[in-house]
Structures are given as structure tokens and as C-alpha cells.
Length: 506
Image (cartoon, rainbow, N blue to C red; front, side):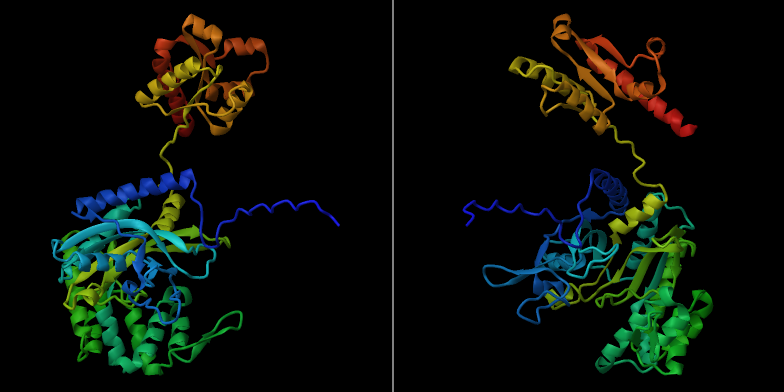
């Protein structure tokens, strides 16, 4: 019998599926992007707000608990008072709760923007995560569609502020009232038809993916894909299908507005929706936003059920290469619409609201494709090396480091095992440090430091073959008085910046 104790099993380091760790480059890119978005929102008079990551589950609207554990679409846990809480699914429902809870203190219209992570308890896949960042802007307490028009203009200005030129984006606008009117006109009004209406909406939402022919199949009996899988359709007859396809197929709204008005005539909301679309079109045109920037497009559906009026989507229209090597249009990077009923759930009185949400990760991918993000130069820190470990010497090294930082130079003092000096230079090389500061006993006695230009040194080591050539080349290490440390480091960093600039222009 083996009496030896079994070694404790090491804990396996693993990240949960559907989540990602963000590296320095990604974090800097997001910060750069969100700073530009924030600047546009601030210019429009919006103020920041931050809501909690958790909300009581019943406040999230359609994700109400219908079993012992409410986990359909959301991550939930039970508090010690047996109330269910869930991680926020989006940033809109928490805003609705915040407005209702603080209604007497809030000045209406309430204009706010929020950036933060949201969480979805869904099956992860390629490009589909359970945690991702959104950046929202909303106006609460503004009943007129001029607020919706302004949202569309702000979306256009935001994309241009990020470097996306006109012709590479389009803000597409529709109105759920018009769509509801079309559905009512073809006999799909009333609560008893809610399920069939939802199937029609889902079919329309596939227009970009399957085209009019594929959508026609989904509106009718159903569609079989290339693998043989069959998707049951909405069950419309041919006359109904033709009217829906006319609606979503409108390319020139001005030419089709009259026929659309005739289609929805007599419905409870259709005519009102057409009037609102016409009003938005007139407003954005008057403000100088032509159809090359903001366009009325009846194919815009937006999936969430709480939209009650205008809906809009920001689409990037340039081509990118997908994972299969195919050229495809990049597509949507954000959208939103009017949701007049969301705050009202808490209030028992009408509280109009409209807003949009940007998918930060998706927009960041687009900007990287265009070369509009991550171009900001990040210079790694100057490394102050450590030759002696006593308190007095450490104090001198730290003082040098602080002097560099006070002068606006990114710097760090080596914090590893200082006794192996070669490892310090290896660390500097791997880190990409531009300069190393060296002061041993001899230099200290003379009141000087050795300043090593690591970028120039790396270049010379690849180009110089003998000592004679080394002596003739630009010096990669020099001695300077301690008092001149900051000035000399600035001089070297400036020379390196000039070299990079010349290399970029070659």
C-alpha cells in the first residue's frame, strides 16, 4: 500500500466561455474611441450617468422570472432577502429604472449618455460574447420626433468624428408605427396575432442575409437552407407577402410615400407613423443632413419589442474581408429608437423616451479595418536600472525615476531581481523600452549617469560588423551629468521620434 500523500491537484487557469481578457492595446483603443464619442455627446448637451451592473430581475422588462430561476437570457442570483437580481442585459432598462426612481429630482427632458458592460446568458460563438460594452445616449421626456431626428444626426456626427467619411456610413430610419400599420392592413392586428407578427418581423430582419426571395419564403410556408434544415414561415398568403415586400423593398421613400400612405390608410397607427417619418426627413434635410447620411429605409426593423415609434440603425457601407476570405459589407454598428412605454411601466403615466446604442467592440473592429484606431503612438517607459540594492542607492534611482516622470516622461525603476544586471537589459528589450539609465559606483562617484539609446543600439547591432564601424557610427550610449539627465533623455526621445517619422514617410 502506498502511504505517500497525493500531491494536491493544481487549479486549472481557465476563462469562462463567452468572456475575454482585454490587453493593453485593446484598452487603449477603446479609450481613444470612447473619448471621441463622449466629446460629440457632450457638444450635444448630454450628461454622463453610470448605473449599477445588477438590477432586480423584474425591472429588466421582458426577462421576468417564469420559473424557480430566471435565467432566460440573463445571469441571475438570489439576494439574502430572496429577491432575484440579474446582471444588466442592456443599458436602457437600467436607465428607465433610474429615471422612475429619481423622477422628482430629474429635469426633463433628461439627456444622458452611458458607457459600460452588459451581460447576456446566451450560447457564445465566433464574435458572439456574453460580456460586451455598449455606449448609449438617450433623451427622456421629449415626446416630439424632433428628438429622434437629433439622435440620427448625432449618430452621423459621431461616426464622422471617429474618422469614417461620408459614403462609408449611412443612418437608416424607419418607424414601428408604419410597420404595425402594414401588418394591421394585411390582417395581422390584434393580440391574437402577436406570434405571427413576431415571425414576420424576424423574416424581414433577414432581408440583408437572404434577399427578397428568401424573405418571401420565410413570410410564406418556410425556407430550407443549404444544409437541408427547414425554418417554418409566418404563413402569409401571396397577397400579404407582396404588400410586406413592397414595404421593405422601398428604395426611394419620396417616390413611394404616397403608395405607402394608401397601404396603411385606415389603420390605427400607420398614418401617424408615415407623418412622423416625413417630419424626420424634413428636419434632417433642413439641418444639412442629406440622404447620403440619413435615409428613410422601411427595411429597418430593430428586434427589441419595446420600440414604439421611430427606429434607426447606423450602418457602415464599406467592404471588409470575412473569415472565409469573402468581401462583405461591414453592416450595423449600432441603433436604437423610441421606447415610450419603458419608463411608464414604473410610473403609471406616459414618459416618452428615445435613444440609441453603439456596439463598442464591433465599431472598434471597423475602425481598425479603416486604420482609424490604434494609430496613437504609445512609447514604452524609460528604464532606470538598479546596480546596488542598499537604501541610499535605491533612493537615488527612485529620485531619477520621479524626475523623469515629473518632466512628463514615462519611466519605471526596475523592480525585479537587480543582482543579475543582464536580465534588466533583457527585460528592457522585451518591453521595448527606448532608453536605459545606468549608474554604478564609478558613475556615482563622478556624479554622472550612463544613458543607453536602446532603439539606436538595436539598429546598430544589426548593421555594424566590426569595432571600426562601431566607433564611426552614431553613439548608442553616452555619459552625462546627473543634472542633465532629463534634458538628455528628452533629446534622445526626440531623435527617435524623428527617425520614426522619416521611416513612416518612406
